[in-house]
Length: 233
Length: 359
Image (cartoon, rainbow over all chains, first blue to last red; front, side):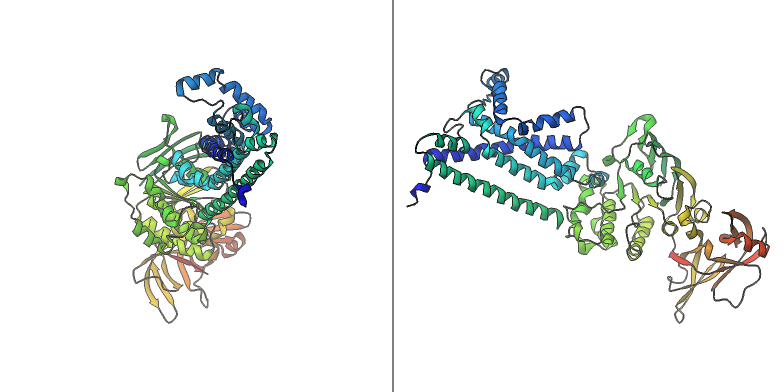
């Protein structure tokens, strides 16, 4: 009866791949995201405006352009891409790692923005107080700034994950649409709508997509509440 | 216990220029707001980097711009109690108290957690988050937190200013005990004569970024001409006295000193206990003959040592009462009518006094 709800192996692969890509995109951008957010929130250096602009570029550029730029810099024939492949064994083009990279870059501005706002909201007088108690700047960051900015960090992670789950333009441009390697949920849905008789599959994946999005939203709600509780009560 | 501060700082609209040495257990930085008190202790703390400074605490150089020494704040071994307690909101009271210990080398941890928690009476609060504490409780925890970091100097920036009178009365004794027992020099920022006369043994009077007077509390507090305008009415004399007798029928304690005898309401410790009597200059009436039929309890005898004009209509009269100085604020008109002159024997009638356990 419910056969029409069962995912085909190809569809299941796309879902699993999408989750993997989004998870890695989120985790890989976390550390740089916190670092850049900290630099933008607290740093005073030459080129800060430029850094801010570069970080936000993927948000305003057409995703296809971002994907194409990635192809130009990290493609098999590009010098940097070749260097990474030869010396570090890192190949991005037409691999799932490339999809993760494209998703990470597309979600990066969202993550940085959320973290930066929460770092800016941290009371610097508390950081000064921690300093008088003997905490070096690194310890102040780890024991005061970061815990107090945690709600923003969590929000940034969720945003990055959600963006990665839905990323289409940059991914398909950079790593194409290879089933089992780079075919994420959105590209699978797109492919299914392009072939006759694919509507049911597209519908199933749409349901999965909605379910994952809802779960991510609810998880962020719960996490945010737990974090807020930890700070206030 | 010596603190040596030489500091010059120009922040555009404000210039600080201070050079001082103090060996007080509790040195009050006293002056109107904007006089540079907080700037000065922020320089000692390392929270502010002045144009030029030399700061030495107990022989340890914290900063010397001439020798290019600037210890960052976390290496200065200071305890800082801010006006707002600044407890870390994500940590419990216990974790806040222990925070400084995490950064103190094990061998240098002398302050005992239990002893300090008991002294401040904060044991019931240990597992609470700061958001649940009252203002006074927060300030107690902040004091404990600073002490548990084993500081070599304690900086307190108007720690009582944001509290109501009841909370002040609750915390002041803790600060007195710190001063008497902790063996750590304290720099205490205040703009209140009442606080300074109760707590300080050395006072640094500041105005517009400069030190205008420095000395024992009793000597600075009676210099009405130097006190900030809004606190001038609180200025007066501090007299060290001893408890002689307590009359439970009238609930009155008799105090004695070379200056004379005083009677004050309430019970002030056992016979022989040392207390400090604070007499505001405006509460002293001068009589040239022995007054009688008066409700005032306290009359001191003394010799006029100086008459100094204060404002257009006022006059500050200083008396020598058995070796202790007593000041009175009069109008020039009254002094003229009484024919007051230096060397004259007079009676000082005191309308009200406040008493504090002795420093």
